[in-house]
Image (cartoon, rainbow, N blue to C red; front, side):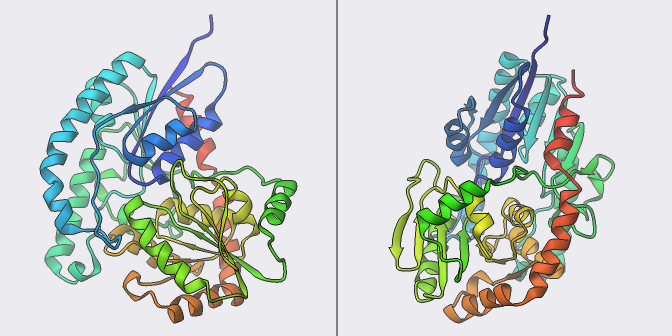
Length: 392
């Protein structure tokens, strides 16, 4: 009699980075004898269901953003009472869902409640995470007290995440770790921490698909192609996209393809300027990544890991006041694979000058190839699959 290997996948619901990692894992684990159930909230819930997976809905515990897409300290402080209500609700719902599904193993991507529920039920539990320490804004970090708070908070959070049996970091080992500042300095998780490599697509993009996309969009091989791939929480995306379109529409020598990342949005590209195509949701992301000479992205870990996987140098515009993204962007400059633009200093001159550096200075592509080769030696998806299948 064949046994069924049940896997419970619980990604954080804000943005699509966490959900995309676990849906990619599910797609690679999709074989006879393995069943999946997801658990999430927010945009991730709709994204997961849109891919055809079963997903349980739980109350949100999420951050809030300002009107210009910046991280809002004030709004999030006001949200704390709701978090305190929703977290125990999440835990209770997760216990119910886990008892109904009875999985062999629980995989949490940056969510605490599934780990607590699994711990109560004495179920094996694995944490995937690329941020332990909550980084404050650069302005606050000038103060010694703020840096001390970061350290104490990091160790406290590390202690909470430690209820996982294993802690997997979807990143490269030191000194190439993108999330270095949010992970490597936390002592309380070191004994369980394992760098497994990026969880990004490894499928080779077919030449015929690339050619079809190129013809559909009328891409001219003699001009540089820029993919503006803006990910992250939905309230942070549109302000920066609108700003970039206003800047880039006056650059006829560049071919611009914009992806809004709107879950459930139109997959038909719209020509909004002589040199700009716009997708609400881009169904040919990998083909456009392959076609592009450079990218404009945020500073999210998943977006950066995808850029590395495709070997594309990039301009990074992190979310304003978002400590983790600012830290990631600083690291990519240190590695020489991209340029970070201060989100408070987005001007036409600044964007075009740095984009031209990425396109025309060979050092960025050379350094990117070095990091890409290192990344290719660590297959995050296969590493997690091997770990999951040990729970029988």
